[in-house]
Length: 112
Image 1 (cartoon, rainbow, N blue to C red):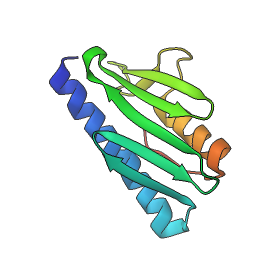
Image 2: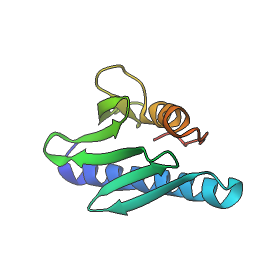
Image 3: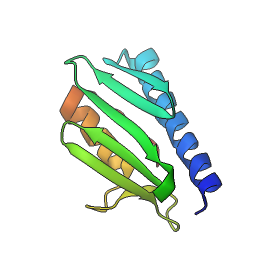
Image 4: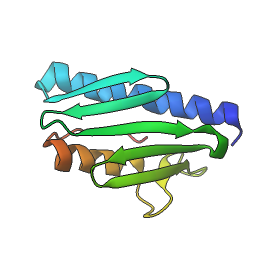
């Protein structure tokens, strides 16, 4: 994956996350908020904790920082999903778990 492809995939992923959170806020009155800027997305929970999605373009990785730790993801060429370099879990799975464990919010993210 070259840098242009990485940036396109990363920005698409941020849009999907934002759309999922926005729908949960509007449809289910979910107790979560988000802020996007500088190619970073911050999810804020009612208990004051946050989860941050950012990018590392030089190595074509998406990073996720949460209370449970920092995780690095690479795009899997076959599944077209972000996969954690340490545990092999998808970004979708990990974000759903982090939102539930960290903020008590159940969000059904699409494949990311």
